[in-house]
Amino acid sequence: MPVLLAAVPLPVGSVVPFNAPAVAPTSAMSAFQSELGPVETFDPASRAQDLAVSIPRTWTGTYQSFIDGQVVPAELRLSSVVAIGQMLDLRGELTVAGVTTPVQGNFNAKSDQLDLLPLEGNPGSALELGGAFQGLQGVYLAGWNAPRLTHPGGVLDLQPPRPAPRPVVRRAVPVRGLW
Image (cartoon, rainbow, N blue to C red):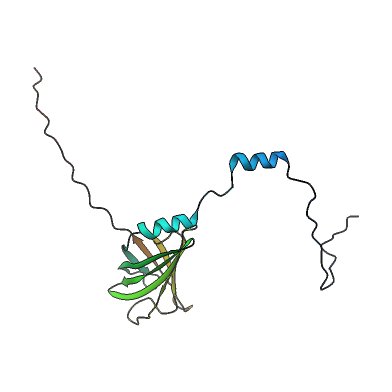
């Protein structure tokens, strides 16, 4: 009859010693590591440095509250973007329906997760002090988590500014006769 070792409790304060394997790594393992290199080749700290320079400083879009479903214009202006390891420290101001609030946030360059916190409460807006925007797709789409359970939250949908369209230069094509 099999005996379950996990069902036998160890006495409190007992130490289970760890014995490292005495076998050296096999040649197959070393060949695998030398041919393929490390498993993760992505450098999030380097990406954070690149994003600190290249991220757009103005984002425009809409905010939709889940209370009444009303869609209002929103704009995020970043005044400071600083890379700290794989994180970006974001500071600026968020304008929702004409009400401007200073914000501070963190952006993870490895996972594209965003936390954006309003630093002041505005009674005239849907954003209350103590709530936060949390996004899993960076700044593009973030959900508002209100500080109270009675507030259902909302969604902030922002886009970077679109570059101006380049003018299309058309040359006149000579008209030729069919004959």
